[in-house]
Image (cartoon, rainbow, N blue to C red):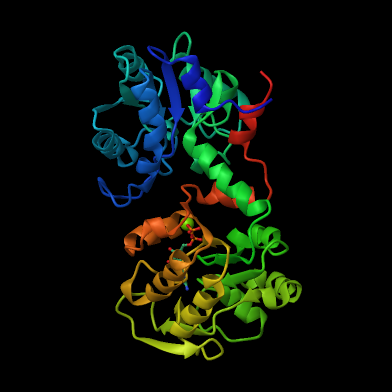
Length: 402
Ligand code: ADP
Ligand code: MG
């Protein structure tokens, strides 16, 4: 069955109907302050178009990893406030997920109003492994919409999760793919289909083990795979170089040896690093060649020659995918590598995609031009799983026969 979309739902007419939207509003917080509202902004178009068409919008979302019980530290209150500011209308936060407070809040909605349910992970059934438990929560969420209800799946960052508000609810309500989910999938299809060449992928971040499956899946498809960040030290170790106290996954060394052999000269590693004598913004630092990391020093960023080499390798690409920072960009002395490589990506003429929560945050925190990239994905894990060739349950369920 073809996936029904938000446009189909709007075409049916939504005035006066209660529509449940699963959004991804999982933003980084510093206390009550949102440090990067990218996901809230990405969720706006779908919510706004439903509200403008007169729907009574019920938004379900999660924040962080509460332990299946209400916890003020994970309340969506700051998110409701920010969502309201950006929409230009008040967004009520329901005091619970599917309890009496949520029921009262949805009853009092007028046409075009928006209510945000409290963190759906306050209910342990959301992430339960037991399908019956999840189905029960899904039915309670669906019941909030009353007669003629509908579900719009727009939380791209969670579509790889088989969770009640993502997957199970789509089996009990008429379900539609939201604009963000459709846009993200469209970009990913371009990357896995027949991308314009040269096609270069830049990978970084902390762990090889996290990204191994995507390296394996992408290697045969790409022309160049540039590896920086914390994960490159396991590759350097596989080549027999000392890495000092840099991040190293010893159990991955053999796998990296095999990948290096398979990849040939497609796989490009850094040629120099900024090393530090401690994992700290005020550590002593030096710049050393990749083969010269001494004991007691750790590589926390790629060096200037690597930025030049990676920059040259991305500048003439026609398709680019970047996932994972080149260094510990959160600390100023180790941000230059990420800034430099990301700038080269932004300046290229390529169709360029940024995937990964920390990479997207780096673009904004380092003040890089967001419009230099063709697409900044809101879903790190979901994008990677798609690129690995895995099924995304929250997407697959939308095309199920019902
Ligand atoms: P993304 O969320 O974009 O997929 P990851 O979660 O894989 O990225 O990795 C991001 C983290 O990797 C950042 O917090 C960054 O500080 C860290 N990192 C990058 N380079 C290094 C390094 N050389 N040593 C330790 N950590 C690093
Ligand atoms: Mg991350």
